[in-house]
Image: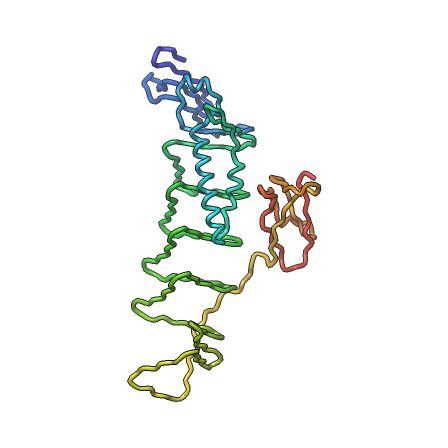
Amino acid sequence: MDDKRGQEHIKLATEYGKTQLNLGHLVNQRKEQRGEGFELRTDEWGAIRAGKGLYVTTYKRESDEGVNKASLDADDTVLLLEQGLSVSQRLSARSDSHRAGKLEGTDSFNLFVKYTTSETSSRLSLTQPSMVLSSPKGVATVTPDNIYQYAEQNVLSVSKNDTNLAANQSIHMSAGNECSIYAKQNIKLFSGEAKVQLQAHNGEIEVIADKSLEIVSNDEAVKINAKKEITIACGGAYIRIAGGNIELYAPGQITHGAQSFPFTGPKQMQPTLYSFPEQQPLSPYIKQFVLVEEATGKPIINREYQILNKNNQVIAEGKTNSQGKTEVVHSGYEEAEVKFRYKNN
């Protein structure tokens, strides 16, 4: 401990694991300055625990201001939370109005951190053991190895400007039910060298535009193949190709123009079709359950549950979300009796 003015510091240390708490004017063994602030270090393991919640920030509070304010006063952080919630709610409403679905995590984001507001400040009210991390100049998470993220409910990532995702090799996305992309302006999909593939292995593909639809092959050919039928229709006229026959009808006239019209004998060309992998879904039967209070009909939120089949094997478990919904539950091909039960009952 040293109380020399301008160089005050405290060091609490043990040789076990070289564990130290250094405060204030940080110095080495030769009393040479090596830093300022605080340092908590160990060669062993470390843990930070706060049973009711944890607020970590690099927003500065002047010493007099910090002493007079509550420890969870967070005007800047609360403002950012409000802005993020506003952006996500606005975009979720737009996406839903265009039938692209809404951002399911927005409601849980609204409930994530509740806060009270006075005339002079905003204070985080961590009503649940959650953690808030905020910084005015950026947050970086880096490692030479892997980064893992998992949420038992929803993951919501919001930016006021741009969100960028880059990978030096590949980007793979997988969704158990639906993948929806909405943009108010443009959606672009480019491949710099190889092909672009769009496949529906057990369903249809719809390409719909309110204005024009253009298909161009710049250097080679446009091929349209179908196993059963191809129909082209416009203004009441149509061409149908099916069963080896061609139908050509029009409510008005049909105009032909060419140097010659040679007619030859019949020919045929088999369409080029693709084989898809046999669909073996995780389970053929899909259901999402909503737990509600029997008397009031209100959803039961944040309640742990388990769902078991007739052999008492757990096929799903977790916590209900802000609408009282479970995760999407899959059951197998075999007949199964699905039961609900609370873990604590």
